[in-house]
Every structure is written in structure tokens, then in C-alpha cells.
Length: 306
Image (cartoon, rainbow, N blue to C red; front, side, top):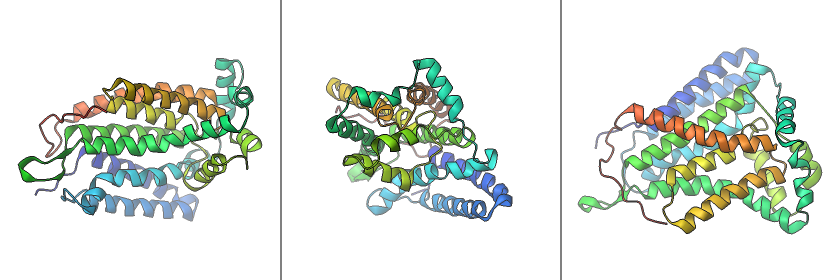
């Protein structure tokens, strides 16, 4: 079978190449940037190798089509480091707090938890915050499952247009947020969070651990969690009315949870909703202009109503 490198593979390679160039030039300021540049060179080599896999089933197929998910955490974690090349660690929280105060006549993250006090509300909204990870992973595998076929006696996964479009637009949105965080770092109201929630409950400390291990402290504005959840919904567009209602409810609860738990300013959440829609439209347009995917299946995949 002829090897095919798809649009989303090229998008990842371009992004890794840009970050490689930035960090390689930035190695003048310290060894850590040279190490980061070399790590991106390794990731570029790995993507080139993985994107050449032609297996349609088994572990190699899983690796071929799911490797973008494995890149999300390291690429998100590095934005604070990469951004210091441009602004030396300066953050723009005071500017964003001014926007927050102007739009909402105050800072809702400072009093929302007081309006809904108690351990049950605290655990509920922390649970809703964690649903982000299930939305991202679940949406990806849902789109991948729609590319399954048993035509001509073969079983496995193939290059369906719907799945290739899904991955490209989602990754384009993700890369857009990462670039924004690099040039416009905002920490968010995490100091308020630690004063209010640190050490309390079951899920709160778990989320704080996730922040420590795999999140960047400069990626608050706009909220990529909310924006990416919006893009996933728009890409999948469930036809079942109950599933649609549940999906929208999860996005609403996720939005409230980012403010309730003082992960984001309210303006971050609002910007996440708007930017999610805008990035979906922008990257959908870009994808439509790129032309036919190599080896993409021409048949329209019948989506299973959830």
C-alpha cells in the first residue's frame, strides 16, 4: 500500500518546525532552549516515521492515527518556556483583569464559589472541569470509529474524509491556542484558587496535580479548554437530540467550572466560547482550500446516531 502523509501530518510538522526554529534561535539565551529544539527535532523525526505506517489494524494502526493525542500534553506544557524568548517572562494578567472588570463589573471568579458553597458543589464543578479530558479523547475516538469499514472483506481503519477533517481542524485550533499563549501569556487567577481550594475535597487536589504535571501556567486567555470543547461539538454535531442536549450541557458546565474553580477569569471563558467558533470556521475554510486528501476514501461515511 502506498504511504500517504495527510494534511494533519503536515500541519503538525509545520508547527513542530516553527517551534524548533524559535527555540534553536533562542538557544543563545540558555541551554534549555537548545534541549527543547533538539526534542522538537526528535518529534519531527518520529512524526515522519509514524505517518509512513500503512497498517489498518493492530497497535501500529492505533499509533498511526492516535499519535496526535500523545503530542497535546508536551506541546501545551512547553508554551511558557517558549514564550519567554519573546517577552522574558512578562505576563498580561493585569490587562486581562481590566477587561474582566469592564465586561462583568467585577471578577465573578472571586464570588461564584460563595454563591454555591459546600463540598457537593465544589466536587461537582471540579468533576465538570475534568470532563474536558473526556471530551477531547472521546471526541477523537468517536471520529476515528466513524472511519471503520469492513468493505472488500477487510476490517480495520482507513482514511475517511470525516476523520481526516476532524483531526486537521482540531489540531489547527489547538496550535492556534498554543501560539496565542506563547505571544500573549496570561496566568489566570490561580493565586485565588490556591487560597480557596488548595487541599480541599477529592478532585481539587487531583486537578492541581494535573496542572503541575501537564499544564502551562501561561495559557489562560482565551480558555483553550472551552474553545476546543466547542470545536469538538461542532465537528461531531450529534444528530440525537438527547445527546446534543447533554453535549451542550457539558460545555456550559465546563465553562462555569473554569470560573467557579478560579482556573480562569470570566473573560477567558467568554473568549474561549467565541474563539472556539472562530477557529472552527477559519480552519474549516483552510481545510476546504487544501484540496483532496491523498488516498482519502471518497464514500461518505454514514454517521451512527448517538
